[in-house]
Length: 361
Image (cartoon, rainbow, N blue to C red; front, side, top):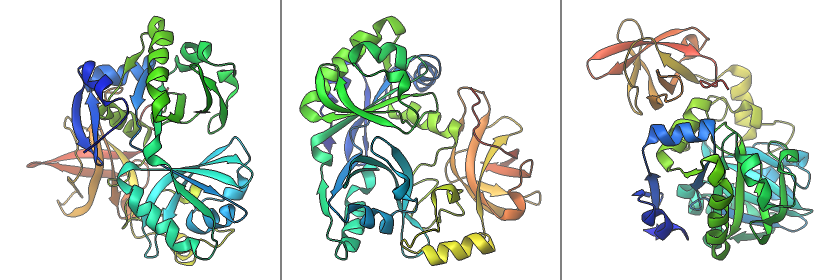
């Protein structure tokens, strides 16, 4: 089991540590609901250093990225980031990721921790044609997510950059907490604003300490992976391994908005055909109409008790106080307001298909 550079810090703070994607990670400190509320109303810090980072450089870097990713990376300018996915050859998704344009002919790809080796091998298999320079820098870098509506105000004293000027999915390479050349990215997985900070492993402890000093007056707290999951689910953000995987297409997963057919990419012809014909199932968001907590793997059934799908993510929403979830169903059940049922043990609990996000600011 790998540790992040901050593992001993989390342990000293009393974090409950669990194995996650091959790493020893903090799942909670004071409890999911309290940590969730801290991020929704104030500012919290996640150590997400288990994520993977690939640096792709050279004259053909963009060509390789265009081939393996579904979104159109030609739209990126220096200082901008883009959400995308890596389609596989059989209609599914190798991973979802964020692509950063660091400078001309240099891109940073941030991938999910559990998929680092798989993603590297997949991208490498297409690089024979392009011969771009690829570096896996995952082991040397740390990532902090400073999230919440008070993040800008709490962190402004740590940098010479005006944080309020960094637009969503934009970033600056600048000084932060006394460290030079830190990536300050206006991205996150919570829907409550804030930043993600990329730095070297030997810099992250200094940054962590200064972040908590600067945030002390704003009630800043460390946040674990459990609250990260409830926060992302309230926004309807997909989690790889749950809502998307090697057997789910970006079209059926509702990721058509990052699947651009103005270019040739892996399996693009088949995905374009699927989009034109319509997928055989769709990922929908639902709220329970009665008490209950939907969980990953629960059956979705129709009014006659026939199984029509499966819950991919589910929880009791800390913000709205009802059971919420995502799951795949046939298109006939995918319209807003459609009535479905979630099989929770022996009970078929009624639910309605709703518009995302669940959490409205």
